[in-house]
Figure (cartoon, rainbow, N blue to C red):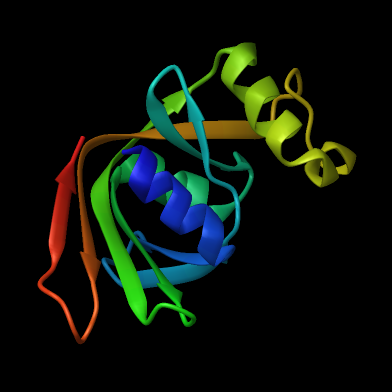
Length: 133
């Protein structure tokens, strides 16, 4: 999992796919990724449509591309909300610029971790590498 975290972190931006209430795919850019208590976390706001979509259907997939190496990662799994303050604080400490919009104690900040995840690292020149966690 640490290898996947480091790859996503290096890419900076990844794209998260969810499904809306009409079963249409929705994809948007994200930039937060963190490891806390040996789980891979992302962050968003509970007021956002993406949060509502995840709560209705926690199955998501993210994708990112590292142009320097020509590799990409697809990470599929289920996201689980963690309402504890500690993982929120860890995320905000990893991304201090977010502290202007989010707080570990507000009712909006949401951190979610991947469960039943399968990551595939791919390129045009090597066989895919699969990592499950």
